[in-house]
Image (cartoon, rainbow, N blue to C red):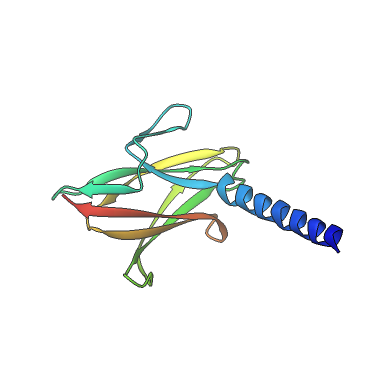
Length: 135
């Protein structure tokens, strides 16, 4: 009985670690800028918006080539119950061999945003939440 429990626990731990790794392997980052090597500079999940708005670099990093020609970032506002309201879609062209890419995105309204990344409009890549507050 102890052996079966030990095997079940090991299987659960392996599954958990595998899921955690694959979920964090591709990620959106929100930052002030991006280095030439694709590293986020001024990384943050919270940004203060001056009256005129702010441009934030949205960086997508993948552990593999994107194998697509266009990426879409779909922006949704989240309310206090995490209900989503569509805001906009920001497309950009990419090369199929790229493993990271970024685009400057303007934030003009304070809100909690959920951003989804899709390759060629259909293939979900990842999502992330960012908060934008008024100064």
